[in-house]
Image 1 (spheres, rainbow, N blue to C red):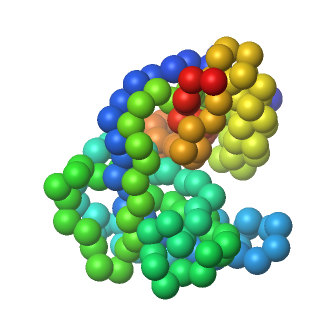
Image 2 (image 1 turned 120 degrees about the horizontal axis):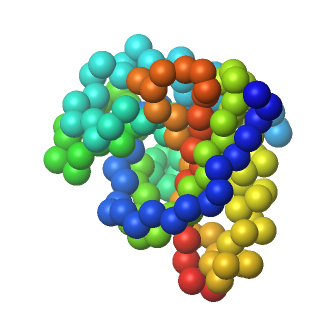
Length: 166
């Protein structure tokens, strides 16, 4: 099977509270940021209580949004899991939040994790065209998520983009 995409679908939901780890990177190569964020999170994943599901979220991150000592303009990758509002915050991890509302979702479906991950950029490009054609603009959140416990293959990365009315 070659890389495939689902049709865009809209879901409404409450706000997200995400706990995880981030790693800064320089230049245009995000690879070290993704690798560093995963390496920082995976050994600590068992310390996160109050998980909402088995999704692992990944997104480009501006650390200064949540960390007052991070320089403005620092670029980073964040990997984490959604937790309940009342869940305790592990000291060694970071937290960020996404607002609730309407999100458009597209699944990137591949035979390998790399193939599904490569589809994320293409799905974002596709949704960038889909949104204005359907009366929307991008809101304050864009992330990809994969279901950790789902049987594989296929590998699925789901792109979420917060919607605002145009």
